[in-house]
Length: 110
Length: 118
Image 1: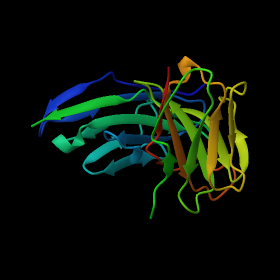
Image 2: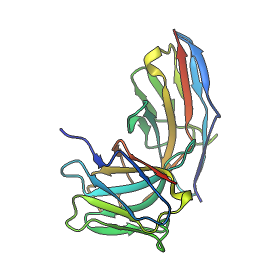
Image 3: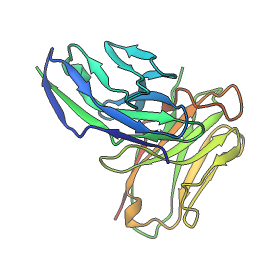
Image 4: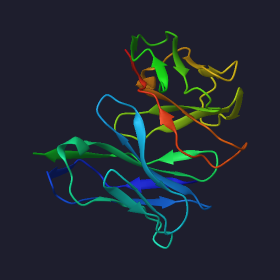
């Protein structure tokens, strides 16, 4: 079946540092790929998405590129802020059943 | 526009007791999802509805879990009887699919119900 593997957390950074959260996937078809973010006490919300190979999703300074050859969808941001502290989930959908990774906690210190 | 509403936000029960969770999706969203999220894990799909029809319930433990979406709007998820291992956050999400079976697009999540079974 489909699966999503993302790097273990927590990831702890200082404000203005660069962020990369790795995500790789296994799917039998050609899935859409997503990053969701969950702030403390809130539900998950979509951060960005990509629906086909080589697409780049971007939002709020975050970006991720759909790499079919490496089956990856790494999340990046050039300069993180304290307000980016949250849990980030990589997810895929290959028709009908969405599959989520375990989540990576990001902690940004002032 | 109101988001996905879930209630209650927190529930503490003793094992073997029944419990029910309620979800009201975003107005106009035809697809509704129930997920279970264990601590330190990602959401796992329990059941998906397209309008009032349950189109994927393969992950729902049917011996103790049941769900309904009678009028294709709000939905209830029930556990009877609850077990210690059912302690988790239960998430509801909704989305709009233009075509039946369309590969899913953005889901909108509610805040979840945190269930503790003692």
